[in-house]
Amino acid sequence: MKNLIKTTLLATTFAAIQGCAPSSYKITAPVTSTNQYQVDNVTTHNLNFSDKRDTSTTPFNHGVLKADLILDNQPLAPVEFLQKNVLLELQARGLPASVLDTSDTEIRINKLNMRNHRTNTYTPFITFTMLSADIITPENTQRVAVYVKRGKVPVWSFDEIIEPTLNQPMDVLVKELSAKINRALYKQQLSNADVQTLISKIKANLDKDITYLDVYQLGFSNNPTAIDYLVELTKHDGEYIRLAAISSLGNMQSVAHFQLLKDLYENSKTWSDRAMALKAIGDLNTDQSRSFLAEAQAGLNKKNSKETLWTTELINLYL
Image 1: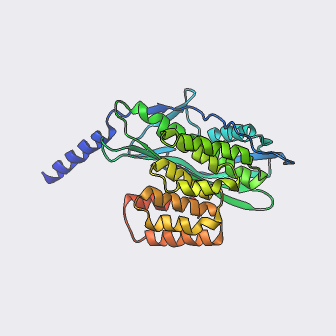
Image 2: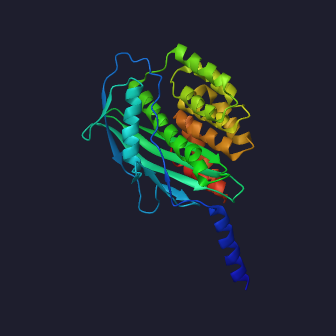
């Protein structure tokens, strides 16, 4: 009898979490950035995107709610999507890039997926969009990663979650990988004037949900004049503005702010802030940052919770 009651409660809870969730979502491709880097004497790079994912057990979109992602009336092909849109983004930034299967500049995709989570019908539908890749040239191999957390409570229908939790994270995924390819291969940046224009836009729209995407753009600028304002935004009340700012300190590889990121990881009250601080530390790509991630990972092995699983998953993108 007890087992029957337990099974019934689990089934009821799962049904409540599912709500009216559909079996698939139609997503849209990212819109390319409008601000170009200051391009000066750069070499054209032919990129070879290679798919090294283990897709035997985990589909691209997985978690509490199972649903396919549909783009242009076809099931999403994640690596092909990434290759096409990263190339468009690099070109929109003014960078000479093309795709060539025989190139010795390889973008090796090790992991690329989207985990979703929801506790019940009254809590947000959350996605964690993640990438682990190696940028491989004849000179060296550089590990890069992307991790985007986004949530939305569907009020009237699950269609409300498509833009904030599916389209926007995929947009950030493309733009962040593009920015990291720029940093590794081209080393170009936005002009000081463009950075200041972007900062002014952010300041004028800090009360709008969509502004967090502009904060990410500031982090993709590769211009150190953006760092002071990003540090200021790590204290902002808006969760996604704050997370974008923390992430951006890593994207800018602001090694001088390692202690700030360490303090955020150790002292922040929310898991999201702690996780994004770890992500930014991983992006610093130093011996100190890698040691810190390894120590954090060792500490997590003694715990057992969904947040431990998520944090371990994030750290493994880098190690």
